[in-house]
Length: 473
Ligand SMILES: Cc1cc2nc3c(=O)[nH]c(=O)nc-3n(C[C@H](O)[C@H](O)[C@H](O)COP(=O)(O)OP(=O)(O)OC[C@H]3O[C@@H](n4cnc5c(N)ncnc54)[C@H](O)[C@@H]3O)c2cc1C
Image (cartoon, rainbow, N blue to C red; front, side, top):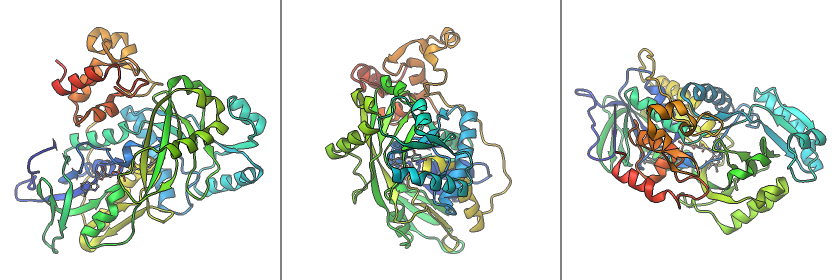
């Protein structure tokens, strides 16, 4: 097992051979695929353009673990979200990824939306989800006393949950690497020279050439550009920006469920949801752009969110804002994912994983391995994966600073470095020494929450930086 960030990646991982499979793109989807491949005696590499895993769309989403109740029935997305949601809920329990099943309420604000709720319940049933329940206005306000005036009723979806979007891909990558996958970071694939029938593909990366028999495109927003490297032009990715506002932890008591709007033409619409870190988020917008790097927030976007948020939960807008951020969904004009096997190229594209990829990731991992097998990859027998237990970043579960026994055994867990998020020296030390260590302060934040609190690093920034740069002694 290895994680490399520099040097020529080893293109002969075993004597005389190329990799069996290279997965390009280490977002939540690529990491899940690599983890699934690690169950088999294959030589696998996960190759990523940036310096860390989960740096693309996967780091900036709404962090809902969906049931798939509102997917388009019959689509691959519907099946993957339904299966993936169950798989991730079970995996989270096994590995310590924080999940809170807070449930969702789809709130109707006018007669038209109220009339749409039975149709949504029926759609949920067609998606295999049978636990929705209508709520009267009185029941709704009893559940959510701080909701703004004028709501007419709601549809309850009790199994919608919130999840840690950062620990999830990290758990997959950690388990993949510990189970034998090579992870090559800072390694953008710039050219593909497809192999003939008996020849491996040659991937020209900025760090050198990699050879592989089979290839998976998990490039997120760039899945269309990567397809083009193999001569395919099946779809175009349009980045659909979602801006979000994160409110301070004092806002957490204002809301108990995920508050969803009745969906419109541009997707799921603006929601208010608690986060597993104890904050409340408002968003996302849905703006079709051309620039795949446009992850900035805008004054208009934030103003629109505030206007919508004020109607849903007026008290929220009086709370302090901790942060704003934006992520880009990979929209392709289709109401489904763009997943396809190309057996003649020994190549699978896993593209168009738009607004549900975190939930669907484990199911997509399984599905991709099945597609590779159908394209001719011999999987060999299955073997158990190396176990992983992730550090807990969730507010609803025990954190090290509160664990007297742990602190007695190792005082570093009693030394708080980031006071807003109560992150200890022990947690920072562990993250820096972990299987897939952070490459930046932001990577460290996603592994520990250090600098993610209400002061955004104003107080602890220098201390965290020095620990990151000099290591924990
Ligand atoms: C605002 C917003 C809200 C969302 N909310 C939710 C939600 O609540 N629940 C949910 O389940 N999903 C949600 N999603 C969707 C989810 O975040 C995505 O579906 C998921 O992150 C996509 O993962 P990915 O691995 O396909 O893409 P990415 O995370 O973008 O990963 C692709 C990776 O490929 C790399 N790459 C690209 N080209 C190359 C190359 N040539 N060589 C090497 N590497 C390359 C990139 O650097 C990147 O790291 C949301 C998305 C957004 C934007």
